[in-house]
Amino acid sequence: MKNILIINGHPNPASFNFALVEAYKKGALKTDAKVETITIADLKFSPNLKFGYQKRTELEPDLIESWDKIKKADHLVWIHPVWWGGLPAITKGFIDRLFLPGMAFQYRENSVWWDKLLKGKTAHIITTLDQPGWYYRLVFGRPSVNQLKKSTLEFCGITPVKVSYIGVIKTSDNNQREKWLTKVYNFGLKNK
Picture: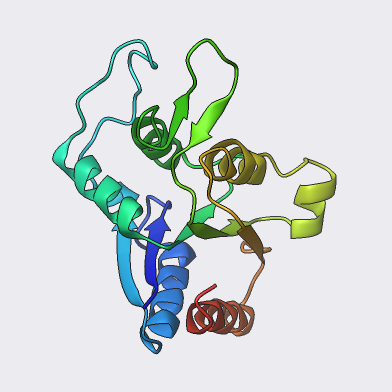
C-alpha cells in the first residue's frame, strides 16, 4: 500500500487549487493507497525561519504533525499556484521551517557535501499558472519548479519529481477546468 501525502500550498480555500487537491484525493482513494493531506494555510505556525540555521526555532505542534506525515509518505503531491514566479509565501515558510538540517538533509562536517535524508520518496508538483506552461519554462526558466524540485526535494533525496502545469487559469472556462480536474483525478488513480 502506497502512502500518499497531498500538500496544498494555496492560502485561499475558494481557489481552484483546492478543487485539484480533492480531484487527486478522489482518484487516489479509488486505489489501495493511504491518502493524507496538509493544507498549509490551516496550520498554526510562524513561517519565518528567524535565525536561519544558526539557532533552532522550536517547531509548533502543527509542524511536528506535518513532519510526521512527510516522513511516513512514500509519495508527496505538492499543489500550489505560481505567484510572481515563485511559491506563495506561506508555502515557502512551511518549507523553510520544516526542511531543516538533521531532518531533511545533513551537511557533512568540514565539507561542502551533504547527506540526503529523504531518499526513497517520490513527488509530483502540480502547479497552476496564469500563463502557458511552455512560456513559464522558456521565458522565465520556471523558478518555482527549480526552487521546489531541484533546490528542495531533490536536494533532500526525493526522486523522481514529476511536474505538471495547469493553466492558463485566469482565462479558463468551466469546461477547461473540468478537463484539468479529470487529468488530476487520473494522476491520483495512477498514484503518480
